[in-house]
Image (cartoon, rainbow, N blue to C red):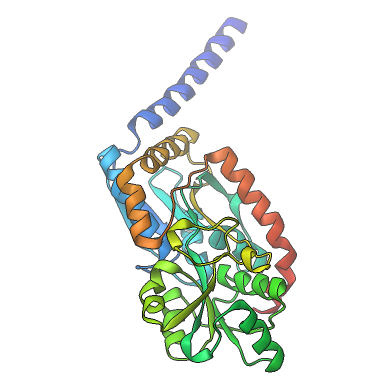
Length: 321
């Protein structure tokens, strides 16, 4: 009886190992559906499509990008959360989609409810811009104007989302009391800035570079700890004596219960992608973004630290909803 039980357990263990090894060896065997909670053309969409391009180059298997904007990305994250954990549905998002939505109460779930694969990239190309017509040409101008004319400066955002949190932290660190309004996506923020419906916004530099060059927009600063050299001479807020550092890691995640071997394999593939020189060139040209990568353990440590930090803004985010 005991020998039979031992043999049965050994067989079951071997079967599990075989299944895991098979998943790692054979995955991906067909097209992977990558869901993102953003519209086409933005920085998240760009990063996902750039990843997909080199994923196919490495594996010979394609990825299809499915855009599901809306609800602060909760439409997309819910879709992935409820998908079959077979490795063929994947989320490409960022901290705004999986951390800020939880903090703000837009979602009742977060990073613990997914299989986090890695941080494939970090957005270091975000800048804060003003419209030319606002007359605000520096961070000090922003502070002075909000004090001289309370409520006159409008910050455009997506309420409850990442850019909303950007606005709250900018206010806290500068003392500039702005009126925060919901304008929608990055493309809608740009339209609102050009139409003088808002005066300040946080946007990826790659999306507004032409307007900056033409003088239609003014860049106040970059919220990086150290200057992103790809942004040229745009100063950090720290160099302006404003303690404002806010990088936005992107996140690759699978539905809970996805085979660990698949999650690990995707991390390996993404690491390989970041070592391709053409990939680095694409990131630089597209959104002035340097290459970054954090594996699962280091990535989770970083994401949990960000979550703990953002929790202090929970009440302010939820009050604005």
